[in-house]
Amino acid sequence: MKNNTKIATAWGLTLIAAALQVSLAANPAPNPVNQGNDDYVEYQNNVDASLADGANPGAFTVDDGKALFLKARGPNHKNLSTCDFGLGPGVLKGAYSELPRYFKDTGRVQGLEGRLMTCMKTIQGYSEDDIKKKYLMPEYKTADEGDSTGSDLATLATYVAAQSNGLKFDTKIDDPHMEKAYHLGEYMFFHRWGEMDLNCATCHGYNGRTVRGVPLPNLLDTHTAGMVMAAFPAYVIKDGTMRTQWWRNERCVMAMRLPWLKTDSDLDNALTTFMRVQATKSDVKINIPGSKARA
Amino acid sequence: MNIKPKLNPLLHASMLFALAGSAAFAAEPGPASWADANKSMDYDTFMQAAKSSFPYATPEEFKLRVENDPTLKTCNATMDQPNAAQSAEIIKFEQARIQYPKDGKMVGDWQQGEKWAKGTTGGRIGFADADNPNLPSGSNCFACHVMIPGFPGGNMGPSLVGYGKRGQSPAILKYTYDHVYDSKSIVPCTIMPRYGGQGHLLTASQVADIVALLTDPQSPVNQPEKTAAK
Image (cartoon, rainbow over all chains, first blue to last red; front, top):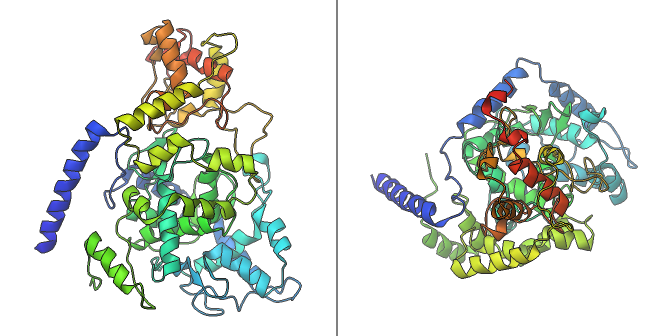
């Protein structure tokens, strides 16, 4: 009963706030959570249906990723089977569902791509420079340009992420590092910057918005956030290859005409943390490889 | 079963403060909001994170693209709701930024304008998919606006189909030019990007071409609906 009163009060305040918005604001306030993002959900369900029943080529990447994960590589000639993704060395089941998290060995909040690069350095012996050339400054092309070569990092990430299939996200804000990452990510989501004066919320903080007629996901709607997060690493039809969450973050950052976002940088991890916390509030289960039409 | 009690924000903050000294504390974030973001993080700390996250940007790129100019600083701090004094300041600052074509003509070539309006590339920097800086930029007007009947457009801005019915008086042309070149000189914290000038996508003559696309009676923007493709 008490809760109902609270909800009623909250709605009352929301309505008053909404009324004020009309007269005062150039832009409406972003939607509260759980209000439905139906056009996007329908659009994305159609994309998923087009690659359903084993038709998602990303399934091959899960196998490729496993082989690569278990292959001895690098100066140390070791595989990645002892890599610690947060649940202990070599524990893959469920690890992705709790990322990003704080890692004591690096002293940083990291996500999946970052953790893979850390293990390539610490276990396989790759140098900072190897990683930089290979993954941080990628010169891949899109399918449109006739080259759909994916990256090793995306292949490995697909395999590790798929070991959390069927689980919900459970990213925990349980220490000051994670708390800072969350607040950096939340600030980034709403902060207007770049040559286009945009923030993430411009396109991804409202229901019903479209770009060129294509419905956009509202990441403040926790169900939609769950759908988006649970799909990456995803098979991107336009590119004909697998793309990771970092790639998804960078696509928007690039469209905002910000500089190139370094994979596993503080803002990359912060933004992912923020969105994973939204996804953690949903019931959507991880389903790798997901599918995306363009981005 | 929900074991974590929902706390009101004030209580929540004081609990956090009380628990900060102990090793473990669990802070379940409330609903995300711009207000919460501005309360929990500050611009300088954020810029520090941006410095290390955009390591490949030149100092000039960082200044033009990453740091906020006075206008965006105000828009961010007020969550796009500047007060009257702040609005006046923004409009003054932005009006002073606007540069007009050297020949003084605010109307260019609508066919060129259609090219810029439909163009999706330009101004993207970094590695994969970065644009050739020697090519002119598009402004991707169709991302947010429906402009030509039958050609897909977005809905973040109003439909501009039939914009030319306003005529081509000097006042309309100037309003249109200013709005494309620097929307914030008219609506202080509008979500519409500023397109003209340094640190933005279009040149003055490209803006004039888009003014032509919008206002010329011959432009596809101003053809009757029946020409719409299926």
